[in-house]
Image (cartoon, rainbow, N blue to C red; front, top):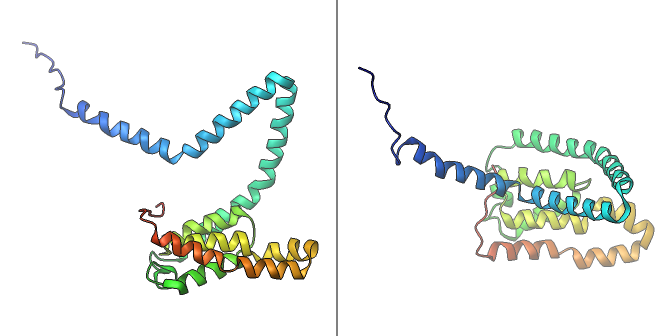
Amino acid sequence: MSQKRRRPEPGGLAGRRGPAQVARVINLLRRNASLMVIATIGAAAAAGLWQRDGGAAVGHALYHAWELFLFIVPSLLAGLLLAAALRQLMSPGALGRWMGAESGWFGLLVATVAGGLTPGGPMAAFPLVLVLGGAGADRGALIAYILGWSLNGFQKLLVYEVPLLGPEFAIMRTLITLPMPMLAGWLARKLPIVWEPPK
């Protein structure tokens, strides 16, 4: 006698795969949301440029985009390699005492100074933010670090601001913006928002 094939039960393994696959897709979309938004805007801009100036203009824009990509890649790779090396050297929670949630104003000061001393552009600074977050720095310290880098970076001060605007203006601007990263970090700690650094 030939055995009849059993039909899969609605609540069996096949039924349980549905929610897991949906959750996996939602997680994938959430992690790549910014890339999808930028790609959509880029495609719409390319379509508008094609309609207005033709395909040659789109090719010219793609060529300049490729040149910019080649210019950015070395800095991006250097920043990622530095961040990966520091991530291996720093154990989880190593910076908790210095820049953690219980470090108070001292932790915000350390993060502000560290951000101001970080050289390079965003390709170097933001991978370090992930490393600091994984090593125990809380969200307030990370915000203070980012603002310290963007507002009070010594490299921009010495290379651009002082030569172009003069030392008086540079000193005045630095004195005004110096406490801003710490205030922003303090406010971030007070906001009722749950955040954890990406793993």
